Length: 95
Image (cartoon, rainbow, N blue to C red):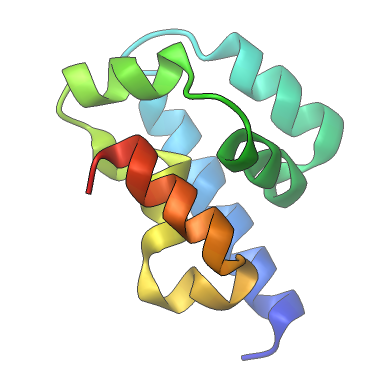
């Protein structure tokens, strides 16, 4: 699978995850960010930014599996992210 296909697969999974997140609460700010920058670039911005209340809410709801950080850490998606970005994901998830 080439990088373009892998990005598309990541974006499709993220869109599915966001739909599930919204069963927990409104993730309006996340939706706005993803609509503005696209799912992949928006995800990278969140990974490289500060920890968000959305991530905290997913952790509290025991649904960290829906987070962008968790998704980025799945082995199949590692090629899309730098080592630094993957370290940030681990730090944010405290793993």
